[in-house]
Image 1 (cartoon, rainbow, N blue to C red):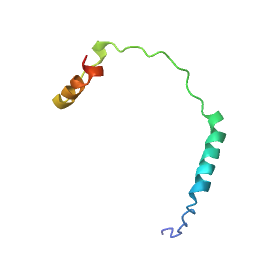
Image 2: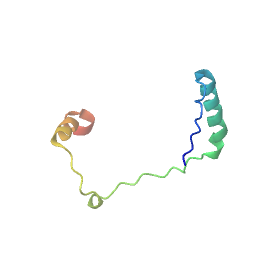
Image 3: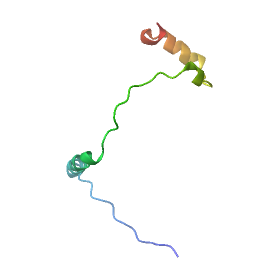
Image 4: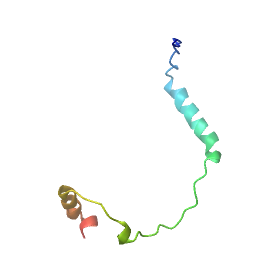
Length: 69
């Protein structure tokens, strides 16, 4: 046996929806804490393996001054 109940969509009042969303976010913010920042440690090269870069991507990055130099 199947359930044939159909629910009507919620009204599309965007102003109230945005205000409601912002209020919900403000109320939930104290419940969501960010983890303590930890210093990023470099990964030893011996742990990096199996990475392949397509030649076109390598050429693109090489041509960019902040990456290629």
